[in-house]
Image (tube, rainbow, N blue to C red):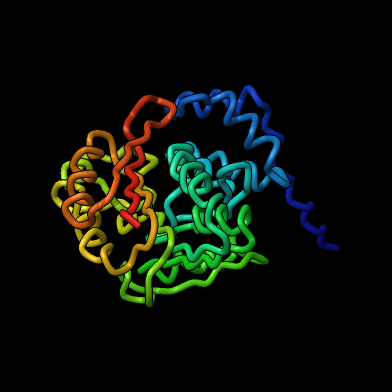
Length: 265
């Protein structure tokens, strides 16, 4: 009588030290901390082994685990969207502070990506009429999932092409990497969609295109994230398109990160 094959062995249980050592050999910063997260978040050993393999290869931890936190809220993320960064929280905070004085504001989030800005505003201001726009249908699929249960409308299009009328507040974290930046991306950033990164030769293409329509699209104030060293140029672009008061805010590292313009109303 033929003996049946023994059941397959479950994957060997990896220890914190083993995972941390593998990540260190792969030049992952904060290897022990990330190892602790992977070990704590993986639902089973097979998933853990796959996650460690992907992180060793340089895939961002947020894509590996499928989520990122922004303003204390958990967002679904994957390779279809840019990973929300803490720097962008400065933009969200300033926009929310401005919105405090506006009842039932109409808000537009251009280049919404994962929907981090739109969702954050809608969650904290249920009375706001928030529209989130992106050219990528794949990104909008992720954003819609993140916005479940909130008052956010979605539009697919190239900047203002898919929306009508004017908005009290516009928020935008557009692609702003230069052509030179795109040639020397960090390993993890190469996993993110180029469409969400590439800002033209000098990184300012989107600001110029948006600024041209601000006179007919903006009622009150607009808030933009910018790359390091771009704030003064972006402020100049905005002032040339629209009379108003420009302000620049720094992130936690002291880098000029957010440029805002308030119309003369």
